[in-house]
Length: 530
Image (cartoon, rainbow, N blue to C red):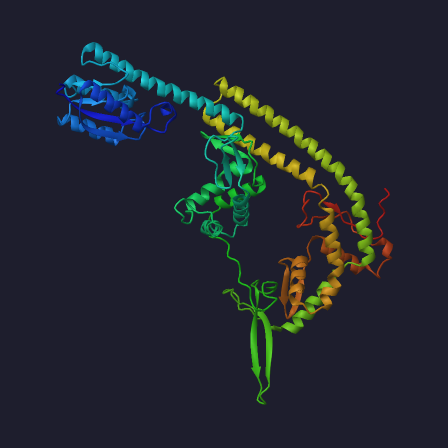
């Protein structure tokens, strides 16, 4: 009868190297049958579900401590690699054998005796287990490096994407990707805090695993992740991914700028009940003009409602003398200003005809730009290859290689997006320009109508922030194309209409989807045959 007391130890992890190992239940069944066959005295069973690649297994450590207390002097396990796959744990086992704390180690598939030869063979078994783990780890890393070079992301996809287990690819989550795109667009405006973005994500059911609102640290990580633009970061390097981007590089770059300038967010002014608030500035002190609602009660009981506009007088260094003005008078002045910028229908018709000619010319312009962009992309590809060659030849340090590679990939991505945008939207400027012509023709009607809000929008479009109030009179300098219309109106009646010419100015429509394409502004009378 065997007088030794044995601890039965069964272990299995979810690591790749354990895939072919028996389950814990199967190990225990086999080991108990082996113990019965060998007449081994099992005093306790230890079960652990953890990798043995690194030291620190709590149940294994507890078992060794109890062996040191003489609660047992033998271990029964399926194989030596169940006890140790690292040099520290393997060394502890051999040391306890040397000290006599462990009198016997039993394995159904491995022979061991506490002799010099037995300990030598045990040491070889532990060394083989460690070599297998190290070799497998290196092969796995090599495989991952090849995978990322092919543009395949080797990890869990970020929120907005899904790991397709069937094809081993990353695909777009159609619902969440829309929310992520909106979050980027909101933050790019510069008026939202990280907390606001976290709240926005939570309101759209994008939360942490515990169901709580995503912390701002996690929100920052999402906003900084280049994965959403078609790139991804792995082991400190940037790679081009095969996955579909959901964020335009232009929006992503804008978000990065906002993150760098993180300070107090710009607060939006609250909408005042008076329509023209936020439209004009005081011509004397430069402060904004605000509106004030007043009620006047007469002795005969009549009640009159008035709205007055006046300077906020917030400039402490100046005692502003500007008087207030009634809304009715200010309305008439703004209407009068708007009429000066109304475009005559015959002028609009000729401008539209000119646009059609420019449409053909823009196609040539776009073709030239696309060709130039393609040449630049080829140059960048060559630089990337040279950079890689220099790194492989050890002429370039790893950190410099990473930094330069990231810069080149970012530049390449921007060029590709610009090229695609030009190819897809080369004629998108025509529709916004046509809309502007119609809007300019409609100013006369807007000025005559009683819709104050529409007049405010029109005045904002024409003057921007240049409209001021001086001595109860609204004045302002028009912007861009509106100045050309005003200049043309001033010449009507003074010189023959055929001579009314706008010298080669440029219209840059702020709302144009094709902002890179500037149109030649002209008014009737200019010859285009030359």
